[in-house]
Image (tube, rainbow, N blue to C red; front, top):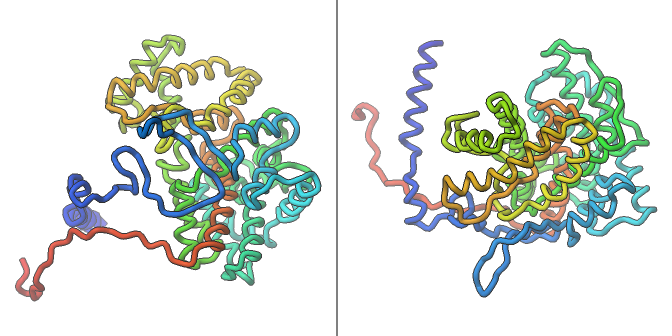
Length: 449
């Protein structure tokens, strides 16, 4: 075993030597690394009518940062949240909008909810034979495995007709909360030696209500808790089409693959800490701050800690203040802006005003600290992950469930983009890479060094 480990270390070093590319080569060959240039502009790879992000405006021919905007099917997401706030739960309404392009009337909304509720079932013994069979602390892996296994129960798994894909998508949207929550309970029982809870979803409850009900041992939750979670789901449901997991959805869809494989690929993308796992890092960072800063109201002490993070002297020593900045937004993330008010209400109800004040302070001073440290080509502001992790912690949702909740929301956006790709595109998405390889002559094995 020791010998194999040494060999692996040697092989890894060979990989580093063979695969290393000098950063200046990207400039030399005019290749946009990560599909983005130095100014953060992305390569346009497709067209979409599902959502849109605005982070800058052209003023006198100059690209000028502006307050962030996010539209779902032409509707400002902030206006959507205002529209259903306090009246009903928005997840189902906005899911209908993203999938079908229009806001539903009352009759259409009832019919759509009935379809989702009727789909909240899993194949016989699926929970026992699949979810509980190999429990894992990585609920995203459990979720991905469950999605791929569901393909075995679908007689029309490979049919990529729009009607069939829509059926599959509606089913996955309906069962994602069950797959994630049951995966967590299996892990919590078998690996943490806690009691096992398998609560069946109720057809009378919304997605957010069912999620909290199934997750909690006593099934209890307040209306405020459910409404704040519902808004979190709506704000995470879709994001412009250019994010990593949605692009993955469209790339794999373009190859002609089946829905289960496509969504499994999207899940694998989302679980990365640079994408859907960011809110976990925010919460962990805040726990670390609270341990090392005794007075949370001392702005200078908090500022000093943030500087230590940027200097790689604190927390995970990566030099990142998590929850600050976004690949697209500059002056503000509209999702964070609309979410903050609901976060405040929940913090007040939970007696967490001191925590909220600390988050608000960091939201205000972190951009200043970052600007002092590095040259910034665009503004830095709090993104939605900065507050979503705090919300989930107040809702007593375990860390292992943070990213799966993101997936429970984003499955709607993935489904909408998969269907749009199937309807409009007839070519496989195939990006080009510039080869910088040097040609070499073949040498017989006995003559090699």
